[in-house]
Amino acid sequence: MRIGMIAPPGAGKGTQSALIAAHFNIPHICTGEILRDHVKRGTATGRVVSGYLDRGELVPDEVLCDTVHQALNDVIAAGGDFVLDGMPRTMDQARAIHRVSTELGMAADVVLHLKADDETVRQRMLARAAVEHRSDDTEPVIERRLALYHQMTEPILAWYAFRGILVTVDATRTAAEVGREILGVLEVLRPVIRNVPEKMRRPVDLTMLTPAMAQRG
Ligand code: ADP
Image 1 (tube, rainbow, N blue to C red):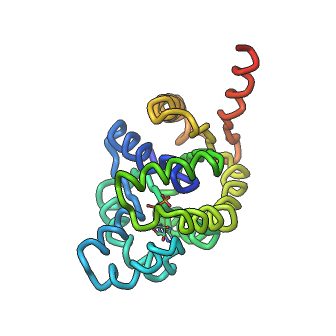
Image 2: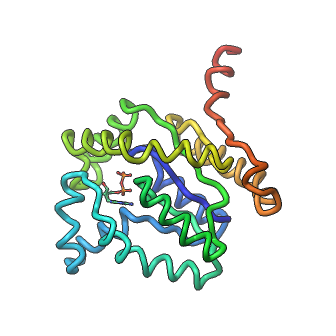
């Protein structure tokens, strides 16, 4: 399985990606973690990126590419399956990943969209701030990250939907509920995806189920 993740900050991308990686026994590449790790270790890259992280800004593409390059090479060497969490965040990154991964025969099979409204993710990030002390979980930085998500990242979803590889789940529920739904849908899709060309597939929006079920009580 080659899985991409798109979600607003605080929607649970990291948690769900880790679950997917463990379940399918595939590598998990988390760009945010890789960057934070550089900051923690005080590397040259860490010194360059720490200001961007603290302000909630996107790290410049050159720095990002250099930094995740090694992780991507490791994935290629390990056979090419992955769950990619934190990238793409811009249409440029999406095009670049698509170009390179298609050349390598490793384009994503499924892109999971964890859908959550701003108020829910704000509350989660503020709650996380009390526990994890991430430098970017403060109110003004959360607002900046949300604004960047809506402006730069959200537009990519339409492209994945058009290609028929987007699966949208309601991420406002508990991590266990969201995880169960994700693993269920991925298990069902797994035998199908490699045999059905993208153009014959359709986007799946599982969030439509939530209001319908609520109405039925
Ligand atoms: P979250 O999704 O909770 O905001 P991440 O851990 O994915 O957090 O990312 C944290 C920070 O790392 C981002 O706010 C940004 O500064 C930087 N970053 C991560 N991935 C990218 C990317 N693809 N392009 C640019 N910057 C990135």
